[in-house]
Length: 118
Length: 112
Image (cartoon, rainbow over all chains, first blue to last red; front, top):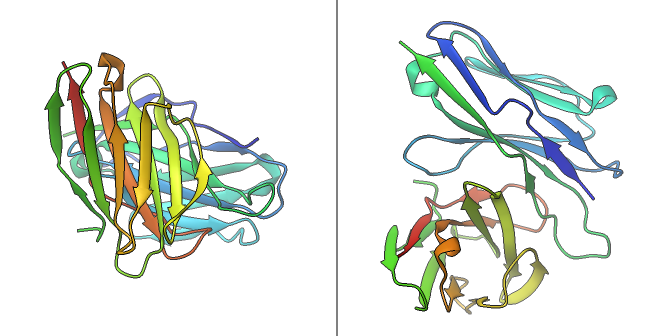
């Protein structure tokens, strides 16, 4: 069965600091998808990125970057020059092929609460 | 606006009651997923429908049921409610089974 571990329950930083949120996943499948979602205080889940297991290229989007390393089963998320608006809970998720047809169902980590102080 | 619409946004009800949560998927998406988010359990997958048919079941209680209608909207029915059912219930949709899940803003259920 697949599993996602976000060991950091809460991270507190001061604005403009860089911060990395860790995500470690477990699966025996060779094909899978990884995701990051943001949940701001308003409660909605906002999609940030999707990465498939065959694409280990790191990705950068503005102040956000993601480091995918299959060798360590990690998909870490870095925010550069953090801002107060980045304060939210961030979830990492893993989606693997179903055992016998059917659907990919994303499994979520417990989330990391990021607090950015002004 | 994600394109996935959930109603109502908030719901307060008493123990033992029954409620219905509604979800309209993003236009063109055939799959609907229901998740429950509670403080102690995190985001738990409940059930998934694809084009009107149930496709996957997760940790869904027998007191809970769901369906997807021909217009692709879905409803999650929660009955004999208990205090522990208080949670944020999310619906997500995707264009095909596999990837690209878009979440609605959730329904916050409070059972008193």
